Amino acid sequence: MKRPERGKSLFRFAAPQLFYPLAGALAPWFAGAAAVLTILGLWLAFFVAPTDAQQGEVYRVIFIHVPAAWMSMFVYLIMAFWSAVGLVMNTRLSFMMARALAPTGAMFCVVALVTGALWGKPTWGAYWVWDARLTSQLLLLFLYFGFMALTEAIEDPRRADKAGAIIALVGAVNVPIIYFSVKWWNTLHQGASVSLTKAPSMAATMLAGMLVMALASWAYTITVTLWRVRPLILERERHAEWVAAELDALEGRI
Amino acid sequence: MSRTLGPFAAVLHRDLLLAWRGRADVLVTLAFFVVVVCLFPFGVGAETNQLRSIAPGVLWVAALLATLLSLHRLFAQDHADGTLEQLLLSPEPTVLWVVAKVVAHWIATGLPLVIVAPALALLFDVEQGALGVLVLSLALGTPILALLGAVGAALTLGLRGGGMLLALLVLPLFVPVLIFGAGAVDSHLSGTGADAHILLLGGGLLGALALAPVACAAALRIAVE
Image (cartoon, rainbow over all chains, first blue to last red; front, side, top):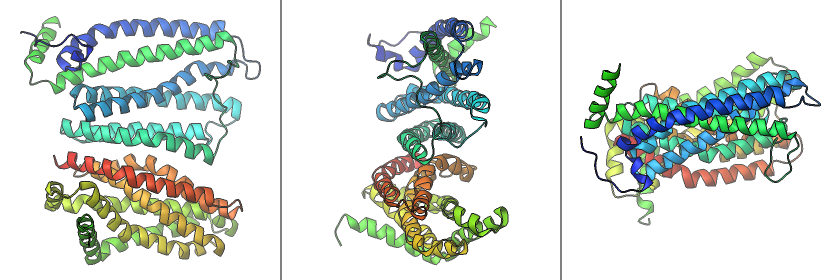
């Protein structure tokens, strides 16, 4: 099989045929990075970081809770970004990326909510309060569910892609509105732990542990997204010759 | 009548006429609203002070659910008989007749809720001074629900289990409207004044009016592709 001639620019990887092997080649590297960073981050979190003066050992859930919460929001924005690219440039791969991202974002939402509940019980005395952060995180989870349910419910993949892209964008416009509406409605959650404009209010090792865990979450997200997009590419491009060759090769290996 | 408003007025007139001819459908939405509101005293107890304090939230949630139930009718009939495709093929601007359809839908289903709400509020012993704020908040808020819901209705057009999916898609988006709508009445009752909430609802309505029809038009094109 002869590869089509394409430009040298990075944009050539927008072609599913070229991105498929690239994703396969990159994923193990990111998986390795995720593993190393997670081990390093957890070591910092549980053995190096000092015990918190006010909360004792309970605070250590922060090392999973905060990166997961950050990630759940980033992933939605990236999903909306790929949706916009897909709608504007009509690229097939962008829609597949959006769909590959959604389950990971929803998972981080759940992780943030569950660890937050476990943290809330000893510190606030309740698993759940109707506070701005918690409520908007819950609604973000519902937005992910809506996106996934809609794209799964539509059988025609082209329609599913575009409909999903529209709801992702409508949701992206609404996320700040939801956030501020629930913030004005009710608030209890502590302020941001880390700010770009202020000196960090926590010990350096605590901050380091949290940032390493955040990087680990990024690496994990990239890994599973690449892994999830590969079968999506094969499924969507199954009419193409190169997919048949790829599947034959895969079968030979087993 | 000016040339641009021609198609707008035509679609508006047609949809209102259809709603009038099929009054039963519209009345069911209104009856649902009334019944849901009347269920709450049975559920939470008929203690007057408690009823008075939950009244704004109850009325708003019931209005939101009634709107949600009526949304699937917005495009379903036109989709089934092919009118929708003809409208999309016509040279008239899609956004224009989409707004006309949403406006007609709101007049048929949202406006009756706004009119009935004060009478129901009296059942919850809400003081009469707050009724005006309640009506105003519903009058500004329910069109936002209709506009956002229209996007969801267009996206789920013709799908199996579309109704449940529609609820999952649009309910999280409805939350800000619910908060500011019920909040307007609450803050009036607590004496802080409802101006901020009412202004936010007004701003939300203008924003939804600018953005939602565009998304809705795009979703309709995808649905009939």
